[in-house]
Image: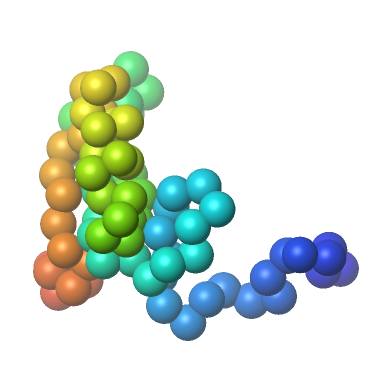
Length: 79
């Protein structure tokens, strides 16, 4: 069952993780919460150019941000 306002399928291109943003992602913000994750574990948020700095600061203030990489470079380095 698809609810009204819910996308019926995943977008063709990765989208920004900022709340309400549907722009194409250009950046990967790799992070982890040291209270929950082992040091080598990386979770990711995606960001458009407009939200990269805001999302980076959000994670950085909490000590979670580990790396910010262009999406194309991240995809090239994936196993």
